[in-house]
Amino acid sequence: MDQPIIDNHYMTREFLETTLVQNKTRIDELEKHIQTVTQRSYGEAAERNRMRNEMQEWTLEALENANINESEAQEIADICGFELTKEFEVEVTVIYGITVNARNEEEAQNAIHDIDFDSVSYGEEVTYLSSSVDNIEI
Image (cartoon, rainbow, N blue to C red; front, side):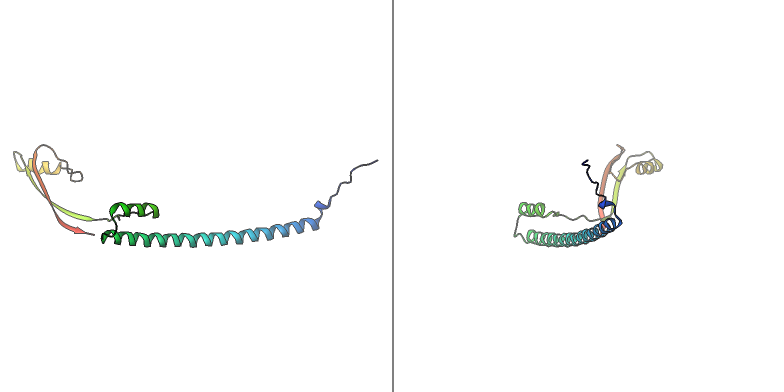
């Protein structure tokens, strides 16, 4: 009778140990490759950042010296991925001179307290509002 012979070599201890060693070796190779690619990626990102910063510096200087116009500078900024402006946090002290129509001093003070200085909005009892910048700190 012709019956297929079942080859159980894949189940031997030696085969399993050999496969395990091969797999561990392959995992080590892949981890080294990942590390190499990651280091290369960080290096390339650092180089791109350096080039972008240098292009920003050059563009802003060229714009300031009128070697290029605003449109050209904006095109360079768009291509290189930087802004032509910088964000500054500025602390400003403002002094207001306010004229208030009121029956007495208390109503005048209340009218002042009702002013929303954040949006510079005020009620109709305020007939004049002027301001001046007293101090700027950057």
